[in-house]
Amino acid sequence: PRSPLRPQPRPGVLAIEAYVPGKSAAPGVAKIHKLSSNETPLGPSPRAIEAVRAEAATLALYPDGSATRLRAAIGARYGLDPARIVCGAGSDELLTLLALAFVGPGDEGIFCEHGFLVYRIAILTAGGTPVVAPETNLTADVDAILAAVTPRTRIVYLANPNNPTGTYLPFEGVRRLHAGLPGNVLLVLDGAYAEYVRANDYTAGLELALDAPNVVMTRTFSKIHGLAAQRIGWMVGSEAVVDAVNRIRGPFNVSAGAIAAGSAAIADEGHVAAAVAHNDEWLAWLTHAVEALGLAVTPSVGNFLLVHFSDKPGRTAAEADAHLTRAGVIVRRVSSYGLPNALRVTVGSAEANRAFVDALTDFLGVPR
Ligand code: PMP
Image 1 (cartoon, helix red, strand yellow):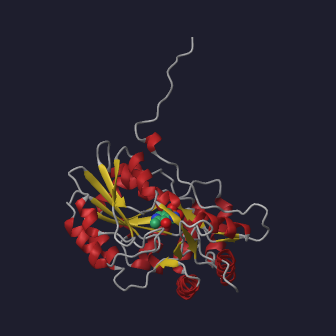
Image 2 (cartoon, protein in one colour):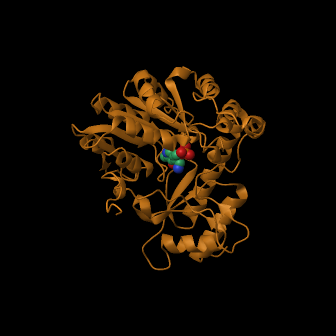
Image 3 (cartoon, helix red, strand yellow):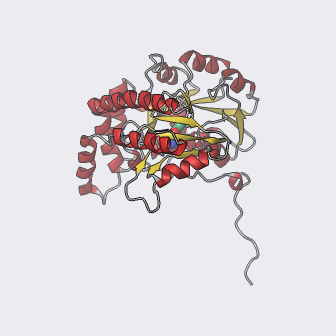
């Protein structure tokens, strides 16, 4: 007779709400502008595309499991010892590996109220308990994070700038947060949007990750480098943290194409500069244009903007989203981040940004 027993997921697994990515299509609309996933309108460096093509000759072979070339290229770009770098299949993988390595059942992990959704998933995946710290003005609140710390806290995630709010915690706040944390709590500074930040105190976070044994910075090739499809992230931290992550990661977690593309992309500083310049220009343009339509915008230092709607019928984020989708402009609803009446829009090409503002103008009934 068949056993009535069934495999049961560990406690916590069924508490996870699977991550639902932003939309990528508008049914029935031929021409779309995808402004939903914070991808760069400039695309990747031509050198990265060429490097991926060249890898086609070796598809039958396993990649270098240590991503030596990519770590060397990152090290050369930022003046870092490659031994202090681990690469991953996107920074998502590294954020999860950090929880798996440092958080266990009964342990707690802290993140901010509107923090990136992967933090909660990572902590629950590790068997830990997520703890949410309130924000002030949609910005990380250092005192609130420190107040949430208990003897069970093992990890604190801080996206700087944060997605989906676009807000920035100046380094003085990061330093104060680190100073207030017990030494056995790992502080993860998620720098997915680091390259877009113009504040000159930003690089201090990287230095803190090099100096402090309990600080890590994660970065990605998905945003400024235009390589989201390749899945490439990296982290820098102490020898002990790097060692722990290297023990548990997949032996070939970064593909050969990713190693080649990332190595070429990070060396193409001209391409990165062009992407930053485009963002500077159009982030300001979009902010002004949306504010001119009478909507509130959270000041952003990333490559996206959080636009606030209202709960008045005809004026909600859900209705705006439906209207934009019909017009072929795909943006991100952020209800799952606790922001039911806001939409997140990525800074896109000139054409896409104009299409967004035009569609929003029509939605609001403002004469063009
Ligand atoms: N951190 C933040 C704050 C993000 O917004 C994202 C992308 N949505 C990531 C990490 C993960 O990016 P990736 O896995 O593509 O490196």
